[in-house]
Image (cartoon, rainbow, N blue to C red; front, top):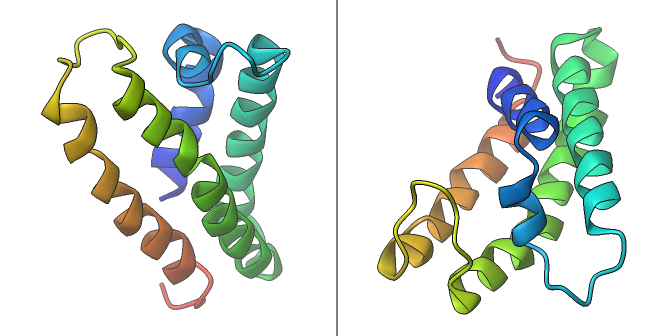
Amino acid sequence: MALFIASAGILHFVNPRPYVEHLPAVVPVRDELVALTGAVEIVFAACLVGPRRWRRPAGLALAAYLVLVFPANIYAAVSQVPIDGVPTGWVRWARLPFQLPLIAAALWSTTGRR
């Protein structure tokens, strides 16, 4: 989970455009918001592999974060936001259920069993 979320966080900086396009134009400071969320994801990843006492709060916060960013994925599906290499149409809708295993993995990371 930490590797996945760290990679996503880094991509917010390496290729921010797809993340910016996931936000409606009415959202102010979209570029800055994407940079902030990228940094937050990197911090989550560091906490998940850091001291055991950080894992539970980080996993719970990450699960909440994944719920909070889900509307951006719905917006991308509804608005047919073009994303490099991802076809429009049903693929955008098909990727939405994959948020659930990510949330489950974030919650699993709070158990301390590894």
